[in-house]
Image (tube, rainbow, N blue to C red; front, side):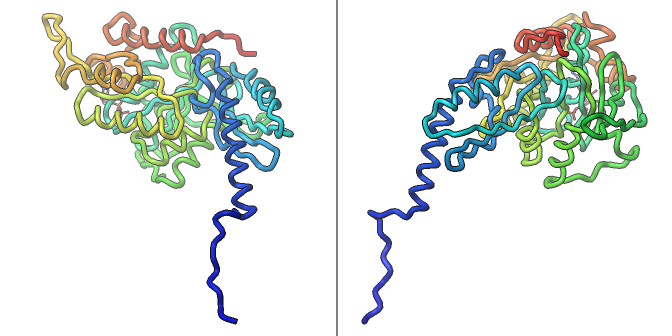
Length: 358
Ligand code: ADP
């Protein structure tokens, strides 16, 4: 008998293919239901906000990770209720990803180094703290961990304490804020030689291993750039959204455009942009746009991401950073102080910060 060629049978899909397509259909059903769950402060659905990750459907069971802040704890019950109405769904397993005690976690990012990301993170944290919020600042910028210096902490010793959840780093205190930095774990003047594959693991773990206590806001100063490591850190951490810092130059703007697209592609909400070094106030009081004009506004319209503020160039923010005294605290009525206070007020209005942690 001649050997017959093995033919595929397009009209009779294999059992595996049928099962794959059923799983995919169910997954889409789950996504549609989850899109009906609205996060009350950001007023968007939890899928668009990137709060649901690692969604899997296995037979009649749904598994997902939910990234939430302390104030969003009613959401799991809503998810359970909405998915239980699917006829085939026997049970939903939700893995909660949260930082104990932290209400809102915000990441500060930039397309590249030197645009003032850490300066903005420190001063924005200071402005939030001055407005009465309980604030923590985590310096995760492994390439230039300058936050402790900018807050006058130097190379302080980090204590490790025992907690019911295991050993944790005790944050330092500066100007009423809690501070922790990857730089405090390294020897002074020795760069942290962490690269891509280990970088995100170490930083993600580090974020979870600090005993923050009760915080309204945790700001995370990320390493610059939007490579795999940075995106993974944000994706794997309970971050409510990312704020991008840029300067008005065309090259920096191009970087931010790329960053915004990249963060959105992987489901991380971009809360807005901050344009730093926007202008210099000359001796007559006129604003001189040294690095170009209107880039941030144009980008904000194009990308539909709010421009949270434009920070002028001021040598005092530099000297304040060197002296460990954030300008937002030492001179809150300066032009920079006012812009930062306005930004802090916008964030507080968005996240309805109430010192109500128990
Ligand atoms: P990044 O974190 O993006 O690498 P830094 O915050 O370390 O940047 O800032 C780089 C330098 O620019 C620092 O010396 C800082 O003091 C200075 N700088 C940042 N913003 C301003 C500003 N608005 N006016 C003047 N100097 C600034």
